[in-house]
Amino acid sequence: MTDQLIAPHRAVDLPIRGGEWSRPDADELEAMQEIGSATACSKLHALGVRRTFVEGPRPLVPGQKVVGSALTLQFMPQREDLASGLSQEYVERHTALWAVMETVQPGDVLVIQAYGSAFSGCIGDILARYFQRKGGAGIVVDGRIRDAGRIRELGIPVWCTGATPHYASQSELFPWAYDVPVAVGGVLCMPGDFVVADDDGPVVVPQALAPQVRDAAKDHQDWEVFSRERLDAGARLSDYYPLTPASREEYEAWRSTTSLPR
Figure 1 (cartoon, one colour):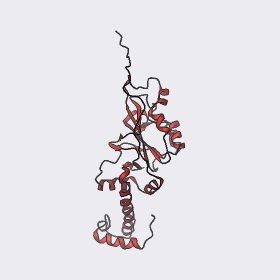
Figure 2 (cartoon, rainbow, N blue to C red; figure 1 turned 45 degrees about the vertical axis):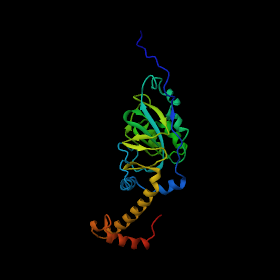
Figure 3 (cartoon, rainbow, N blue to C red; figure 1 turned 90 degrees about the horizontal axis):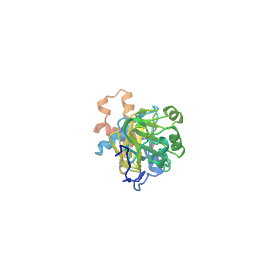
């Protein structure tokens, strides 16, 4: 007998690619650009969707913002008879990590499921550079990146839990699938969902609910402009934040005579 691991016939063919899905069109993306993550989160909560905030990832460069369409990548735990990083990083060119890069379209936000791993550098400088060149808008990683300094220099917006010197499959995870549902920071993200990320963190907006979120957010943003004006003029907070029936009526009259950005 020998203790050497003998790999059986693989039960799966990697990488796995999910089924067909649709990106929002350019007009839909444009219409969502003014929405911040806090507003998106609160409006989804009002619609009954309560797990939308991707807890954990923080902006690599504070002050950046992105709104785009989710392109998903799923890491899974390594199992040496199926997938491991023992062949060093060259093995990764045959994984979902390389495959997903060839599907990038302008406006995509790469959303990576990595279980909050502190050891897997899910994406580095070269891949981030290639993603950006193909029109990728931003990256949200439920885990770490590597080459953090170079990625900062690229200017591409990234949300992650920190940095590590490890390459993607050097530790306990392996790039497994893309174009599949992913779990990031306790949130389900489907391919094609909207991702809104800023200094408050990333929020996932289901694509089908985006028109409702957008309309509610526009009204919210407009009445906050009105409320700020009234509060700056000395009004009472309880009268104007949030609006009361009386101040709502006042706001409607104000809005009918005020030019606001659409």
